[in-house]
Image (cartoon, rainbow, N blue to C red; front, side, top):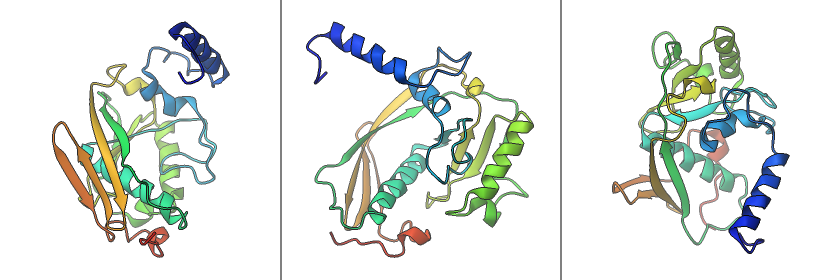
Amino acid sequence: MKVTDTLAEQEILERLIEATKPPVPSGYEGLHFLLMTPFRYSATNPYGSRFRRPNASDGVFYAAEHPSTAIAEMAFYRLLFFAESPGTSWPQNPGEYTGFAVEVATERMLDLTASPFAGHAPLYDLVDYTLAQAVADRAREAAIHVIKYTSVRDPNKGSNFAILNPSVFARHEPVDRQSWKLYLDSNGVRAVCEAPRVSIAFDQDAFSADPRMKEFVWKR
């Protein structure tokens, strides 16, 4: 909107930008962009993610069973940015985020929170995702579309889900939304949701098990 004068011009610009993006996976053109985006873009970072190999074209949609687990994941990765940029000052204003819920249905799910996988250290390594990525490869070969696993970031060990195929979305749009604010400072992270009113705090030791947080500079 900053570079256009009317809604018509904005729509034209949006269409031009859309034409430069990778194509939507065939058969999923009706998915809301929030649900479809992880399957549209390749993983470009050198490490990939827990269940997605580096530069993989196969997408993964990550979700949490409860909002508090999703917030713990977000809080960790926001702090990780500052861990890797020790000279960066704390933000003056809170970060604003939208949490959204999706409806999923599948008859084939791999549950890594159950025996014999629960607590399997290499599978839940804080930094090395090699084994988990191999598990995702085998799951895809077996036509398993959802992996349930324990969050290594949530102090309460809540459950996450790795959705490997967009066919499991029972509805093509988010079914609920929440607005969250994340405050970062030398004490840690405070997360606040206005409706329903919820607040969560993560102190300096909340994520200290991760080796990348060992030399964290809290005073900035």
